Image 1: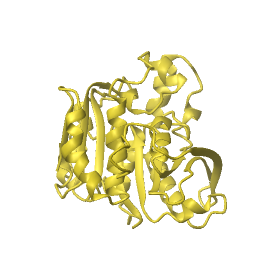
Image 2: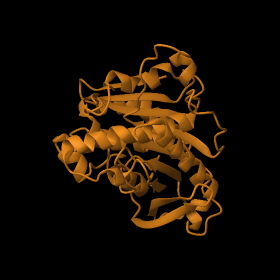
Image 3: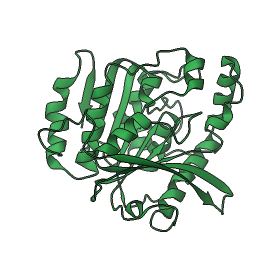
Image 4: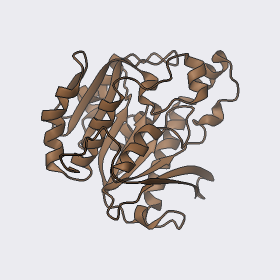
Length: 312
């Protein structure tokens, strides 16, 4: 890891600059707003691509992304037109809920997955991206909520509406804030659905992390993907007592805060999220064996009595 004196919950040693740009997909006539987080380290540990939740933007997840960048990771936060902040046209809670529900559909999910594939294809080729991004040989995927569902599919979740595609071999690890899956009444089993996720995968959720009135997702649904992934090493589940959906957004937007009327200050357990997620990337993106040992053996002692941490 960084060394015994650097707490993974504390800001890392690298100064971080940010940059905005756009990537244009001519084939799909679709432009993706991008935000880059660039640490001033001469040897980045890896590159992480981040996907926001419904109604979000490239500014989403900044609390997580800025922290990871300070520990030496390059970050690329993409914005997904059609399920981003463009759907927030009316500030009334009822109108916002209707807009969110309308955007939560298989077509938008397909667009999001294709956005990831397009960005991965442009790494190493697009002149608007810096050389450090192009030189990344180890890539991680992360997302919150609808972004978590997006990275589940990228990692190998199988759905009838989403045909499988080969994953870029540079992708080494996946982190999902508020992942989800409903129990299937018909069709393939959940073991089949998640049985091809062999990448290291960290799921982070909370005991109050439900659909917040937007869907029938419950806090229990957030644990389903982990439960049905193969036990082949590198699978982790972290559940924070009392944690609600926006605690895992990494900064809630004004619209989200107004709609859900929940606390806006950082949760008491945020330092534990920062520590676990940073060391997960150290272990499985940067390939640090000592970090993997710390995550499974040392990290649990930091948690509160009602929090849960599992791995397999």
